[in-house]
Image (cartoon, rainbow, N blue to C red):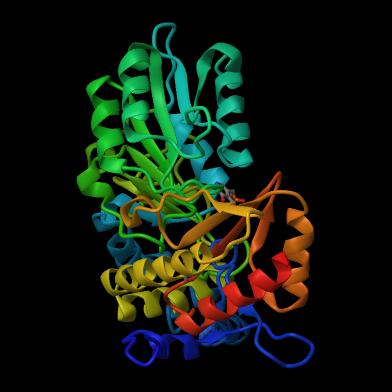
Length: 409
Ligand SMILES: Cc1ncc(COP(=O)(O)O)c(C=O)c1O
C-alpha cells in the first residue's frame, strides 16, 4: 500500500521527532499537534530577515508585505473549509474567536436563550459557552443543553441530535458542536444539523479544531452561521498557531450586529485616517481586532502550501484507507482490555480512533511511548491516535498496532 500511495512522498516534507536511539518516533498524534513542515523555518526566517533589514518598512516592502500578509492564507483556507474567500479570516486563536463570534451571534432573549453543545465537549468550549450564558445574566443550569449519547453508547445518533433540536428549538438560541468530537472522533452531519437548527430559528456554529485539515468541509453550502478552528493540529501550523474563523456570507454585511471591535476590522481604505468611528469591513475580516502576528502566520503558509499540493480529496481517500486499516488490525486483537469508541462507518469519523482502555490505561500508553509509539491520553479512559494521511504510512499503522499489542500484554 505504501509503494502504491500517491501521497507517500509528502512524508519527506515533515520533521519526525526522534527517540534518543535516533529512531523516528511512531507519531500518531497529529490530532493534537501536527508535525513541522521542513519549509516552515524558511518562512519564519524570511519574516525575521525582512524585519532586520527593513524595520517598519516591512509592512509595505517585505518580500511578502506584512500589511496584507494574512491574506496570503485566505484562498487556501477558504478551499480547505469549503467557503468563499470573504467568509474566512485567519486570526487570533480558537477560543478567542469563539467568544468574538458569540458576542455577535449569541443574542439570548427570555424565550430563546439556550446553547446546545455535546456533553463532554472540549473544556474550553464548555467554559466559553457557560461564561457567555452568565455574561447575559442567564443560568447554565437552565440555558445549557448537553447532547448525551444513549445509555451504553459513546457517540451521538444523528436522529437524537435532530430530535433534541426539534423538541427544544423554540428556546434554543445557539447550537455549537464540534465538527469532529475531540474525545470520540465522531464526525457530525454538519449539513443536517444546520438544516434542523435553522428550521427552528437557531444560530448554528461549529468548532472545527478536529475537523479542519482532517475531513473535507463545505461550510458555505452547509449554511452554518459561523465556525472557528485552530491550526496546530491537522493544519501543522505549529504550537499555538493562529486560528481560523468562518462567517457565512449572509452575515457579511450585518453591520448592525453587535461586535467587539478593533482597528484591524475597520474598513481598510480608511484605517490609517485614525478616525474615532468604527466602520467594519464586510465579511469575516470585519471581526479582526489586531494587526496579525506575522511570525506566527509564517509557518502556516508552509503547511497550507503542502495541503494545496496534496489536495483534500486525495488526503481524505488515503485517510479513510489508513484509519480503516488501523481499525482492522486492532480488531484482530483478542484482548478484552480495550474497545474502539469511534464510529466504524468511515463517513462518521476522520483520521482519529479513540480507544477506551479498561484498567491500567495510562500505564499502557506510557509503556507504548517508551517503545516509541505516540498517541495521547485523555482522562478518564481514552487513548487517541490518528494516522495522518500527509505524513503517516501504512507501515506506521502496522508497527503501531504491533507495539500497542505488546504494551497491552
Ligand atoms: C475541540 C477543541 N476546542 C477548543 C480548543 C482550544 O483551542 P485554543 O487553545 O486554541 O483556544 C481545543 C484545543 O485543543 C480543542 O481541541
